[in-house]
Length: 280
Length: 205
Length: 105
Image 1 (spheres, chains in turn brown, red, purple):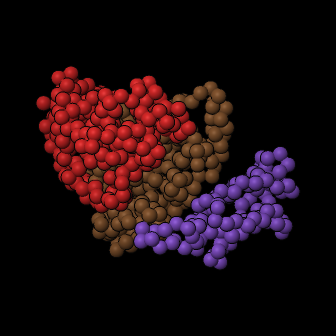
Image 2 (cartoon, helix red, strand yellow):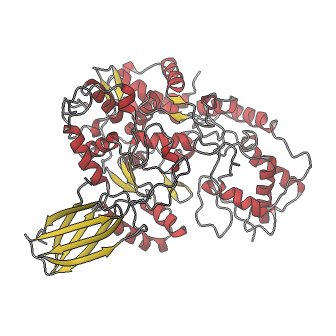
Image 3 (cartoon, chains in turn orange, brown, green):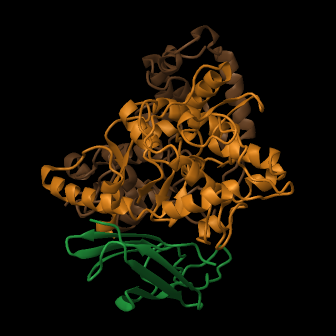
């Protein structure tokens, strides 16, 4: 178990907090990580996601092929790299997942609750089965789509727009939320992500107001989480952080979740997407 | 009136084109308040009431990054007043139990059973015993904490108080106020005090 | 119908190097859901790899192999353009067969 933790910590490492003696181990693990890239189960989600995009679903029996992710209807290549952004048709700032909800409702005729249902895949681990949106052996169309759409921005520069007043408002709101301390543990995002070179147990923590840390962190989500056997998105990452902060549940694709992602995406501006990645 | 620091931080990342239309602080505050109300829901033991900040939380959020001395002094004074010591007067428990509590990261999440005792999550942020390699660095190493300080009554009182309410000693500390917020019981804290101060504890050997 | 495998087959020196990603839950049967009921076991029992009609790899798996298994191995005797066929069979009798063409080195 101890070795697993060390490997886990290094696999996700962004900062060299290790002694020279451990550098050789780091090299070996890096070689192992390269090998893992060719075996990233995220590929399986991407393949399904590509299918979901063209498949006719819902009451309107339509595909998502006319969905506008910010670069025009049906343009997927590069779209993830330019999210979140303001959308005139909904008059809101939206991230990828909330935008997919919009398209599932508008194009495919799903009710909003249906489109939001089962956003995170899960196969019955105790924590997840109680969620209203996943179940034993239940796949998530949303997760598959996120995997594929993100893969279509692999290698591109993280470039969320910041010109519309609502984009600026979302950024500032996200920033306030980042510093918001509450709950029985007095946690805020800042508690774990406010200082350089820190780690929780053996998991290195990015300082999210540090450009390099933010770029590496934001650029590697979505990711296949080996320990969960599932592909996880930014919405999931926010949901999971908030849970561990001892806050009440963050609603999927809610305004607060989008505002946080706007803040983080902009802190990561200029970085390169290397997603879907593979993580511990 | 929001602190200059928040303003400075807000300006740093977003002034690209058309800076003239930066949202006002009051608009941002209203937006955040609305988001807090509508984007979260009660689940299990994690109620939305948890998002109502107490004085310390509100001040620490407002002054994140740069805490004026007047504000930090005020917080420490107020937090000091919350510390409750065990009526028995016994501040040191069993270090073996303390190690178990320090290792446990369970408690207060909506996925945790409400009647299950919380752990201290100490190793998440601190080094404690020498043997445990899987430790965090958000807080300072506590290895040899007792060896360096002894276990006098004054040190026991300080250690107990620090775990009970860390902000009594360091305003806006990252460390949860385990006693004041009702995360750990009196008894649990005494076990952690023993873990830190007992000469036989692995922390001090 | 189970999801397709992702197979990469390349020449490295005189050997064929194969990397396969299989989509499978690999549920051990030991995990419990929120109600306390055991989640039924569902895992790959056998893996067979053939080339030119011959079996080049045969594996018996169990519950210790993790979800979405990745298999990486080399064998002699293959050439670019030839096919490698992989079949898995699980404890519920479900199976999946996919093939890939060996690429040059």
